[in-house]
Figure 1 (cartoon, rainbow, N blue to C red):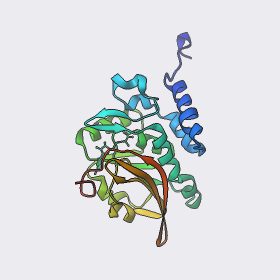
Figure 2 (cartoon, rainbow, N blue to C red):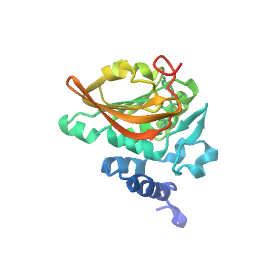
Figure 3 (cartoon, helix red, strand yellow):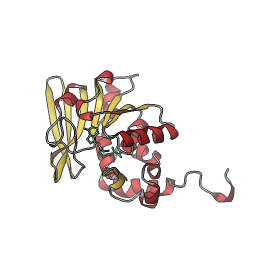
Length: 228
Ligand code: SAH
């Protein structure tokens, strides 16, 4: 017990409220996703000056012109991966997930809380280093942060049960589909710079089924498969 009735985890109440209102309240029912968002201390992923806004219903600036995604979008993306279904079909295997656009590392931490081994790729060197350090401090040993162009995927850890992309793309980067396991799901915002549809692509044998999830506005994907 800590003294003075001080809560051990000061963000917990705010987090529980966020999940109830913004996530459950908007129809996301996957218990694993709800649990994962209840566990990740989002206040540790935003700049110190914005901590008081960590559980707001929106994206926040994390520097270098980039953002930490809105909690609802992170939840929608995570739930759409269907990792529970993948695990049921592959008993005893830990799912490997590729996270493109590490940013703060928040989405990667949520995926790690889902029981995945996460490879996360960030183009910006400073953001990659900061996220690597933050995730290590928080004890996320099952996340590897790589600095590079995530549009090319990361073939060394492929195939992936799930791939999530946190930057808007004009079309699906072909390497990502190639690195998706049979039965795996890729979630990516597709569209133009001003607006996109968060899209889930599910691969089964020779087929790819596409589902439009949400309208969204993400920062643009850069690199070989991004916008010019
Ligand atoms: N998932 C992040 C959100 C980051 S915003 C979070 O939870 O905080 C999108 C990120 O994608 C930015 O950090 C940006 O630098 C990065 N990015 C843009 N193009 C990229 C590319 N081709 N490869 C890897 N990262 C890229």
